[in-house]
Length: 391
Image 1 (cartoon, rainbow, N blue to C red):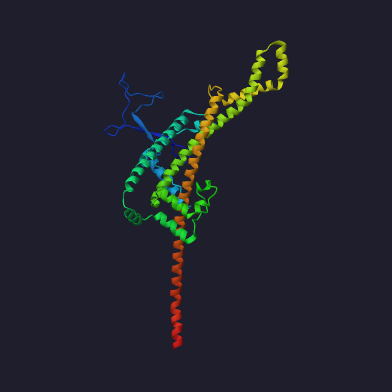
Image 2 (spheres, rainbow, N blue to C red):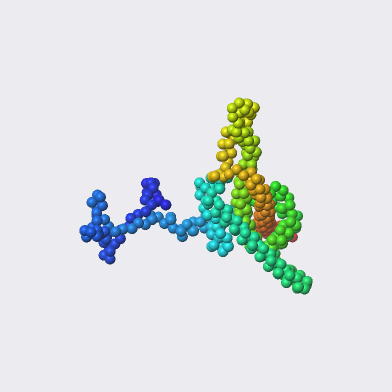
């Protein structure tokens, strides 16, 4: 928040402003005991004042404006590069999205989370993400219920009315796919793959016009505006899934490491306990027979304790149950993540083919106009030669 001075040095973050009376004069600070103006240790007179920021950089209004400018710049650049990625500077509340935002986790907590160590702020975010997922699921269930009611009502209409309604409604996305199919037989893949398209190993199916039309129909996409909205919602969903998937993966990895380490440590620990229960000659004989195992005890115990978190006890059965449950959740989220990435890849390809088709049509139009211009220029010369021959 500090400004830069003319010579390139950091300036003061705040500046002192003296309070003035009705005559524009500085107001002295009066000592209540003596009735005289106060002075500081250097015997300088004290005046009433207040502080203000040296710049307007700490303004929330400016911050919002700068965030919007940054998002607009990124989106304009992405559009030039043919990327269907959209950045949003507004909060969920400002966008009218019924979803609780996560809190700032911070560098320290973030570093601990990456090591598999759960933090208080990380737990808060995980709880927020879990609640948001439950809310989304509830919304989807409500939407499906409404669709079923609507379908039941709609089924009572006459088939002729349904057909006439379907014919009267145009789907610009479907029309674009049909034009590309007519020209090339299949959709084009972008030269520079989008963020989600790169995640798809077999992209042949994504080029199928039939698959694209099925995607458009099942997702109820009837315009490029609804496609953009679908992309934003699925992008947010993918980011949620990615966060939860990473968190569960880290926890799963730690539990598997604990179980693996305990499998090594358990027999060594049993040997050590047996050694401690013996005395005298029997202990000497036992220790000699198990020298190799006993020599590993201290190292394995230290490694085992390093994996345990604050006061965590060794609970192999509980770990096994948690691993099974976590693995099921991890795989389920992974499948949904893959499905969402595929949907976003379809959206990327459809958006790219729209721009590519428009570019091709413009090029063809320009080429056609140039041919007309060339014919127009050569036509007078041909007429002149014909007249000369007739003369």
